Length: 226
Image 1: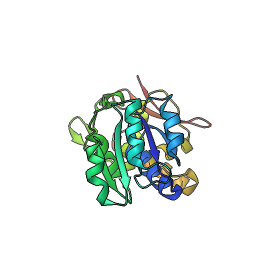
Image 2 (image 1 turned 135 degrees about the vertical axis):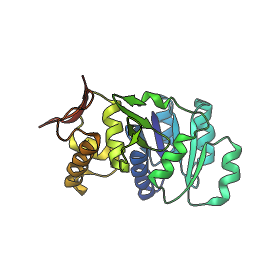
Image 3 (image 1 turned 90 degrees about the horizontal axis):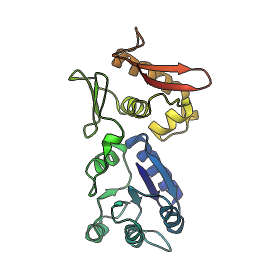
């Protein structure tokens, strides 16, 4: 899933980036402070979703949206703005969503779940072993029992399960599932991994229905399926 975020106010762009990474774990995200850079990128990369600020200098978000749709008409446009008065114009060009700032990960996840041009979210993963993902509700079930994962626990498990046998360093895992630099609190990741393993039933035996989350010094974490 290729996503871009565009906002010429860098502090706002940072907050949007963080919300997207937490709301859509495992996505490929590129952020731009100018419409020109975003268009250049879109010319060589297929964009699935574009989160655009509307009130930007040089080229506003509405104009940028039209140009992105000229490149690929199936690109989903979601406007992220502090101004409600643009809503009518935004939806008149076929946008998928309209989010008011400040952006929250839960709102990002909701908008992505109801895109105008739906993506094949099964490319992430729907089921692995006894575990089933409900992407809309952001829940994981084990034999129909809701494991009640916290948002970041869900993000971590989804990311690992969507990329089996791939190691993620602690920094990658933390940043991709929270949108924050790992220096913020490395201990938080270890606590979340411990809780996740316990909820999945991996704490005592280390393996559940062929599913195992391994930790390797110097490499990080990976999920394996036997």
